[in-house]
Image (cartoon, rainbow, N blue to C red; front, side):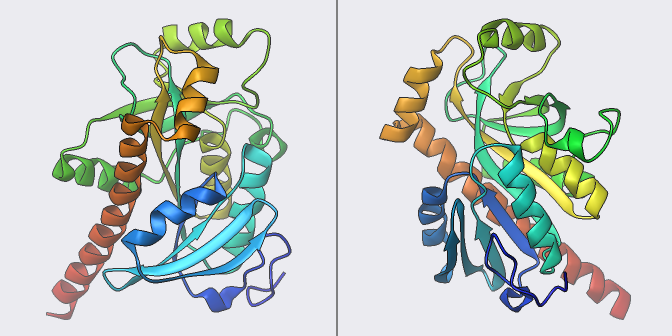
Length: 258
């Protein structure tokens, strides 16, 4: 499919003209990104895929929601790559698997256990689910500059909240040093690696290790203060990282021109 063709699910084409795409899961989370941008505009909404664009300090940014889980994330990532997007950064939520990780803390995954099905349809599970190293280092730098509480390490991506053995699985991976669990980071990293897309992920902790899943999710939906604070931080962190990377590009270009 050519890049200038309207993509069937995200309903966007190359005319959008953005190199960066921020990927929340929830379409409503786009409303919380738009106040950070100049000249924001929604350009499409089809199924779980809602897309808006805007400018952050002069840099055009695209925001596309991906829905819940790997299959719809995979559709969005593939179609965004086909319209010329080069960098995909997930902003989402996660449940902590380690003690001491608090609600509203940020997780910056350095890799993900591929305990989900989508990435397995692409390639054997020996293929690593890792972010672009430049993006991850930029996220760590900007998180330090902003003074945010964050944790960097490996997470687990999975396919269901409600399996009968979820607590046992969480305990198993927690004992192996896994920081948290989500549903989309591993397939994003794998698809990015296979499709030559730069990817990274920033996750807001909405369930503590000692917390109850359903109560935590309800608190997230209802707008718990710590959780909403973490959401705002992950949005600002990703936008500041994009600006930081663009400034580095300009500085390097000036050095070569001199």
